[in-house]
Image (cartoon, rainbow, N blue to C red; front, top):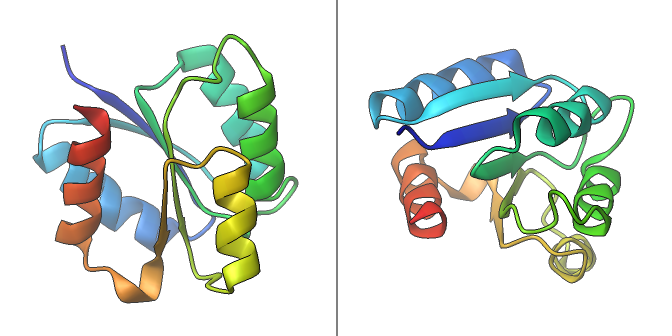
Length: 122
């Protein structure tokens, strides 16, 4: 059975690029372009892992993360935050809300992101 990843990201180019790379590694990838539809999809498909941007339309990633961790049905799904926000306050807030890992997009290559996904999804 393929592991299912939900990628909540509002940049279509990054969504496609990372999505293809993850599919090449054997994962099934579904995507959402905003926080609201991302949260609805998480509740519906219950993915093995969520890749979550923090700067999103309709509902930001902090709101999505908080909603995931407050919902008994989905609270145990690991969330990797993948964002351009790199202030210590943002990192601390995301981790305190329950993010498994916090990655700053500018600091990671695609293969490093995939490696992190593999570590978390084991």
